[in-house]
Image (cartoon, rainbow, N blue to C red):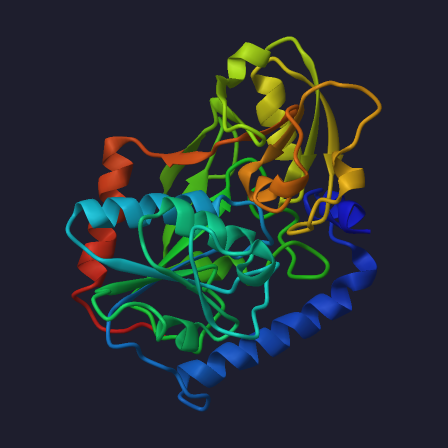
Length: 331
């Protein structure tokens, strides 16, 4: 069902019989946002500035590598960012710190990657305000990962990520389309577009993000190989991410012949998902790899993915964040 919905969401037409539910979703989400904007619902303000990174579509826009990049670059500029995230795939009901060796079943796969690579302290929880209180006292700003619709938390700046190849899909709200909010929500936040091939989705003054995916890492022994060294080989691939097809396409672009197996987003790959009736290499994302390291064999590899920007786009993003930190809170 999820695969069928994804195909329909990113086709030209909505899922017609779900349009009444899309209108209901719009009504409820609009009322909720208005309640916070008008002060009817209480907004929490942290003692340090908050930068929200999110999207208006469902999954697959590269938020995790972007937040890692943003935290690293802000640290280079002398800031001490902390990160809060919901912790999808973990126990989101209990706020907790995520460390580089945390159990992904408790903190979630994305939080574990943030803790391993960002250089910043990370806290997870459905209640991001409570999670933020677990960050060290020397943190001077908070990055709220996937927090665009978490209106209870006041913020100084918003960054919205979009997939340049898929854009806004059919343009309809959930569940008739992939949108969490309407296109009008893009007026105001800073927009970053992943990929953006010629003829793809564009937005005025948007920065363009590339994902560097040229290195494969062995789950069993940590050995690193150039992805191009697998060129022309037949391989298997699994992906439990928002856009599995994009991961398979990345491997194919490097010359690999891919037998892809898509899993639901944030699913924990089981032994059966990792088994194939041959000895060909099996590729996965790092997000999937952290959840199945204990059952990995020497033929299992994950693909590193790091966000990259041209100097001008990097400056556009970082300067925008620093300007916003001196301004008033947004709701």
